[in-house]
Length: 151
Ligand SMILES: *[C@@H]1O[C@H](CO)[C@@H](O)[C@H](O)[C@H]1NC(C)=O
Image 1 (cartoon, rainbow, N blue to C red):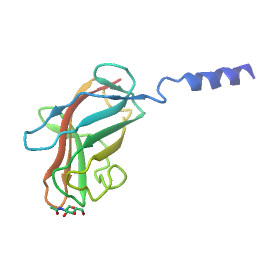
Image 2: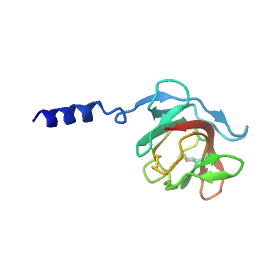
Image 3: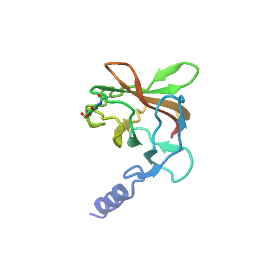
């Protein structure tokens, strides 16, 4: 009985659950392409580069104002090293839950993505680059760069 109670308390205190959402820093990609008005992520730490835990899902939210309409939106996130390496198992179709489609020019738009951190990722700080683009015209709607720290 005591053991059950101890396990229950340990589960409640498990630090990997219920990460707090906070604002994170990012950089613009190109002058011509929109960047977020604000970027948020659920991180395991309170300050600095956002720490993500293996086996966990972290939620990223970008709030932005698109500069054109789009019916089909592609989401693409990759590790921004000398060679761009796409993150594994990502959902490329932003219209499937992450964003409200169609995206309408000059409307405040929220992109909310569940980023699952696979267990096989080596622990380190990764610069990443994320783009949303119009699948029909290939025009970029949003682009931003930031860092994540896989722990
Ligand atoms: C964008 O979509 C809105 C809402 O559907 C529409 O009113 C507007 O005319 C469209 N703009 C362009 C440039 O297609």
